[in-house]
Length: 127
Image (cartoon, rainbow, N blue to C red; front, side, top):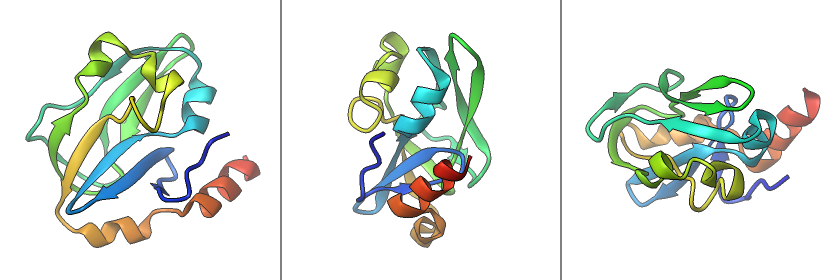
């Protein structure tokens, strides 16, 4: 399982990459493996306000539909439209091609509340 050390993670299996004053968000390698083959991704519109720990979209796999939870609060400033036509990127490249949204945080310090790679790995190993 791939858990890049430079990212932060939510307990709901989203990853966060801080990029200046914005954060890029996707789902983890662990999450995509648990879900199986992703067949559809539903993401919010640019301009949508998201709230930490609240749903912002969903992913549908051959097994189930799962909600996506915002790891931090803020405004969606970019959406990965490529996933509309290529949802399989979530399985193939969860940290590169399959980022989902970019958030302009209302409070960047919320990132500090997220798990480090080590904490995230410890959490999933307990499950």
